[in-house]
Image (cartoon, rainbow, N blue to C red; front, top):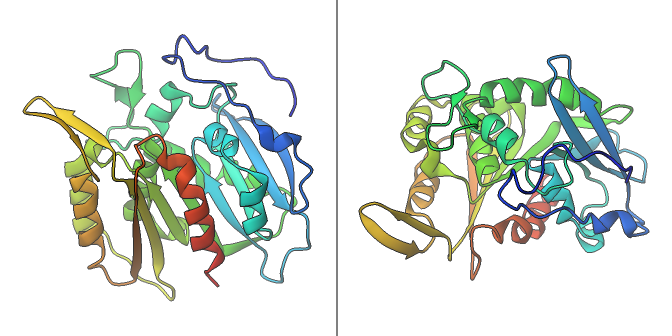
Length: 285
């Protein structure tokens, strides 16, 4: 991987650990790896980690998995995981930092704007912005996708989106707001609490129709922790997420799969979800 400057310090991001990216040290038989640093016309910067199958693309093109929090997602990839999906292209969309997470930019990009007025300051975390999901979705569907898929034959009917925590929230937002952007969505430990009432409103308005059903995979741990001002710490699968799963099962043309990862806390579900997600995608034709 090329040497790059650090854009945000661990100190500024609450001691977020650095990526190791051990996958780049492996001699892979299934995929070729590379990294693209992308500077957009609006001044935003992204880093796209790519794992491209070595074989020829099938007639319809390679299936593609887009992964949010790309630095951390690619950091969790292993040779064994890639061997499970030798014909799937992986595009992990991250940020130009050596850290696993860019907390400021993910807070802006992955959270919807409930009032529809766009980004605003996070009232709970001064210095951060929230509410940029609509803008980020346009970038993901547009310029980011074009660069990620440069010189590749990708099956337009088999693009998938994976996201964890805030990224899982964004996956749900996209599913409910623009379901046709991807063929399937994997929302891992989604931060449903962040915009619960807004998501419920989007559920009521959501409409899934077309020649093919949209697919959704939701996975979460059974040791995820939550607390608020009215009750002490609780360790269990998030009730709000479990309720969301059951409600979404009622929609026509939406195929919902769910999985509770035993013994896993919130942060641990990121890596633990990957074998599950790869198997889920590989089974789709």
